Image 1 (spheres, rainbow, N blue to C red):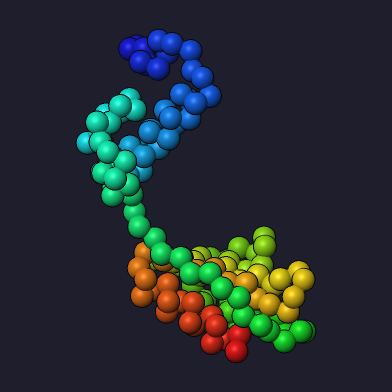
Image 2 (cartoon, rainbow, N blue to C red):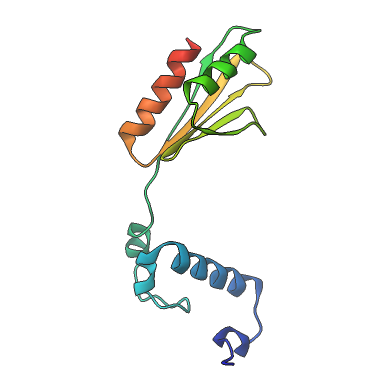
Length: 135
């Protein structure tokens, strides 16, 4: 069995992190394979960043009426019936191409919203759909 080139010298925390990060990128983002597998890429930061997937995010907050949080969250669940739900901190609706997170403020009558998608148009559309439900 061939020894790993990483076993030739002890791993420091910094070096271990670089190796794990590099291996993750090579495995999950095929565009990175053109760079060296051992951390020395020969690529500029800009070239490396250009190979990463691009996401768009929108954050905001909307006032909502006290006592309406439960029905509002139920309405959001019904609006996106195929979404995977995460209720660990508010309500996160995970869709195939995007997600939106709605969480009540602990100090103000506000609903904090965050949306993320692969295109600006999709994130704006998703955000608007949720804000429409709140208003």
